[in-house]
Image (cartoon, rainbow over all chains, first blue to last red; front, side):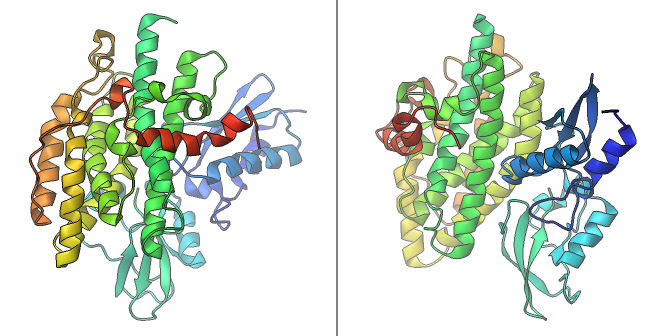
Amino acid sequence: MVIDKLHIEDTLKQVTDPEIPVLTIQDLGIYQGFDLEGDKIIVKITPTYTGCPAMDMISVNVKSAMQEAGYTNVEVKLILSPTWTTDMISKDGLRKLKEYGIAPPVEKTTDKSYLSDEPKIVPCPQCESKNTEMISHFGSTACKALYKCLDCKEPFDYFKCY
Amino acid sequence: MDKNKNILLQYVLQLADNAMILGQRLGELCGHGPILEQDIAITNISLDLIGEARVLYSYAAEIEGNGKTEDDYPYKRDILDWKNILLVEQPNGHFGHTIVRQFMFDCYHYYHLTEMRNSSDIRLAEIAKKTIKEATYHLKYSSEWMIRLGDGTEESHAKMQEALSDLIRFFDEAFIPSKIEKEESLKGIAVDCERIRNRAWEKFRSVCEEATLKIPEVEYPQEGGKNGLHSEQLGFILADLQFLQRAYPNSNW
């Protein structure tokens, strides 16, 4: 099969995240490009959290998307550099997260304030209220914390700064 | 294998074993946490640690380069080959024990990774830059629970004090270099664990103080894990962890 770089890029950009299916792996910053070794395509992905159990599923999905597009000689490589951070989530990704009901990260990780004990305000993705509180640092997946809106009373996930 | 390569391998395995055994211990609480949110929190931390163990075991397999995979180390090594510190194999006990053990490990782990980011071994530095983000959340979590329960009710205070008295003898082992950690060839690669002792203890003391807990004197500090000498606890963990591979060798999904 002829290797068409744009076609490959397009195919890979459309693979979605199994945990948050409204986001593509490109939106999340997990997709880190691909290399060619002869006619072998090496797709690079980086994990959000080190132990993220979705990575195996993402590898499988990448391979099957590529197969459907006609590429069979595909290897998925897990890389740790550049270190993934929530700053890598695209603007589109942040918007989609909120629409999906997950509060997007409120700070850039570069300002390091997420490490201090300053309580941060996470607006409710349902009603926009800033009157919210954290229930737990750890939520339904490694990358999320659990919050509750004190106005509309809905609990919600917060994609925490990383 | 080349001598220096073997030393690096032993060092990487020692780091991986700490993360693996504590991850496995915390995993025992899956579905058994005191309340739902803490059940989830503890298993999230477990997942992070097993993730860290996996990248380190994968690196070990690459160093050995003889066809082994990340799975060979946790599933197929006998007890004397494990080099984790004794602290991480201690039982979950009551929630106070789980939290004190976690807090002690986090104090060590956080400062250890802080230093490892500067390792001259690119892979180790890369792993540290990644995992420190997770360890930061762990330290924050365990510190908060230390304070909430230590400075809580009479009963929670007494239980935390009891846990601290039971576990304090295991705290210092992390900061005593093993023969491997002292090897000349690991200079610049391995973290000088004596150098992080003061910072870790400082954090430990300040949180204990805020938690109104008294740090007990240690009469008999316990060490040996880094050299493969373990408490009986590790045998039980491995019996559980390795059962499938021992009973049905090389079975696969």
